[in-house]
Structures are given as C-alpha cells and as structure tokens.
Picture (cartoon, rainbow, N blue to C red):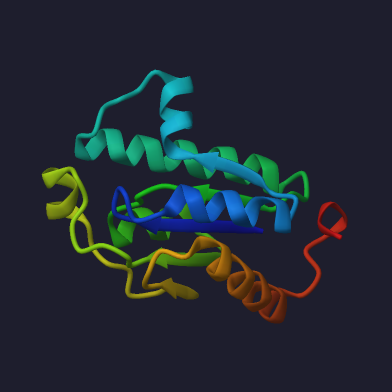
Length: 145
C-alpha cells in the first residue's frame, strides 16, 4: 500500500508521517531526505516532476516487497498526484500559505483525497487515519500485524 501525505511546506506532513509509520510498520519516504540522497535541489517544474517520479519509483519498489509506504511530500499538482498513484491520500490542509511563494502559487489543493487533516494534532489524526485505512483496506499484509 502506498500512502501519500501531501500539503504545503510546514503543514505537518512529516510529523503526521512519523506517527503513522510505526502503526503500519511502514517505510517512510520524506521528500527532503530523498532530495538530499539524490543531491537534487531543483524546484523548477521539471525538478518537481523528477522528484515526484523518484518518490513514486522508490515507493513502488517497497510496495513490490509487500511493504506499506508513507510518502510525505508536497506533491503540488493534481497531475503529479495522479502520476504518483497513491492507494490512500491524506491532504494536510492546516495552513493557508507555506514559506515558499513559488510553491504557494503552483499548489493545487487536492480534489480527490481519502482523509483531510484541518488542524495540527498529529497523534490524534494518526489514530483516526489508521482506523480509516483499516476500515477501507483491512489487513495490510505480513509486515503490518
């Protein structure tokens, strides 16, 4: 299962992901860490697309090994979210603007998501999201008992 936690910078994506990770014995892919490993800090449209593809490919490799993956990254457009192809999307709608004007301008709030977080209380949201995922998807495999 591939879970996308998306939203503006500073919306709480990583904090929520850190709470969800142990609940599913999941692999956590943080966009900043992935960019650091790739040494790719290009935030142009092409750079963002390359990053989304990189996140997708890393996540898909883990899903093939029957792992749950939580990918936390801005994933700013509907097209990039479509290409990432998450099984479950969490939209972090906790702030109106992030700290980067270019990201604010290009960010398209998701029209399709499974769960919307509207204020910062990660521990509470993590439990609610866990239950929602289990209700919708049941047991998620041998790594997640």
